[in-house]
Length: 459
Ligand code: HEM
Image 1 (spheres, rainbow, N blue to C red):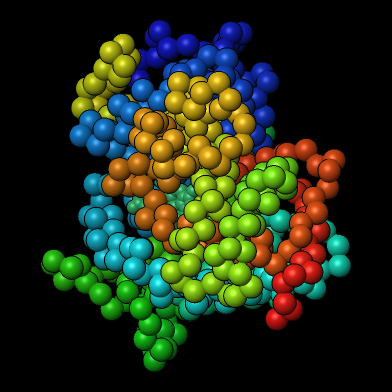
Image 2: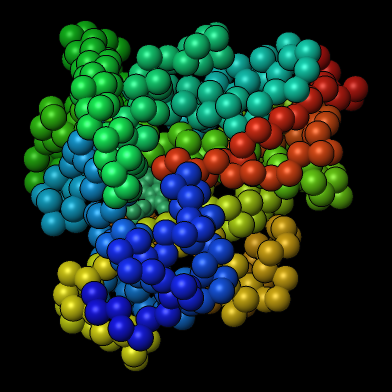
């Protein structure tokens, strides 16, 4: 894209560009800092790679126009294809398998389908509660939320238990996945040192991908050869064809989808829960309000399916946590045709830009001068109606938006409600929010001491 006239931070140098002051461990937070200085459209150039970021709500509104723009599979996503191939998340929209899988899998993610996942989600949540009941000191919130969400997607998607709460060491699939995701991410960094590191780990990466595909193949084979038929995601992919053409997914694609759902379907939700708990424990008044809602709606009962969506304030807490720290921190948009963005910036067909969600979600034009403040009432329906629709996009946009949104929200409201119902939570008053960046965002080193509330009957 012709970047002439698009602002960038002062002090850009030949060859290295804007490298000074940027940290390979915190690309999202670096982008947020730069965007605050020079947004709502800006470029960052790192060693010859120049990326255009668009964070202003009006410009993003244009980019989300599906007639002129679509998802771009580049940068972070391109290298993930070694892992997830043409699975839904990393597929190009033009690949026939994207539409096929999307149409076959969509029914499994409609609101009605959540009823079937509810007991499975509860089952995984009970394991979290049992481990917190037994805790004698602080628990690592992000680690435990990741255990919870991994168990949930493993069981609801494939009838597979990773045993996360029983293990002291992560499941080999998880170790392989974390390493492979890191390897894919490092491929975007053009520093010679990083290139050497990547070359040195190529064999390990191959082994990691094999560990993941072998496990998925085993699970699929067990199901094919006489496992219980089930309407979970795997059951659907094995048994169902396209609703109109009857065409089926091929075995390699089913494997790619399985890996995709585990990767895309747990860290994001886990991060959202962790940030929500962080903000609640920083704001005892809001925590009290959320808990009062849980007590009023659920009492001391285990929640039935229909009572989860009734926790409207708890849901707003999650929405607000994902506003400030959207755990999938951005998406890319590619022009279908030659266009002029914002009446000023020429894009040729195929040019792409990145939408950094933490900046969009803090744009004062949409969120006001107190955009940095945590305030779940921003998601009160009346307040939502007053805002531009494209100011909040934690689940992406258009036909390539998150297919797992309802799943994530049911799971997260349920888990947060259960935690508030059962525990008094003591946070370390000296903790300062630190964000760990991988494919997703999480609060690093955030611990809580959970104590079973005096009023909750022991189960
Ligand atoms: C809070 C939790 C979650 C967040 C914030 C989130 C966010 C996102 C975003 C932003 C995208 C679009 C990415 C892009 O345009 O490049 C996306 C896509 C996707 N997500 Fe999620 N996600 C969450 C949970 C889940 C869950 C639980 C699942 C599966 C069970 C899932 C599966 C997917 C898949 C398969 C796609 C690709 C869809 C397609 O392109 O057809 N996500 N997600």
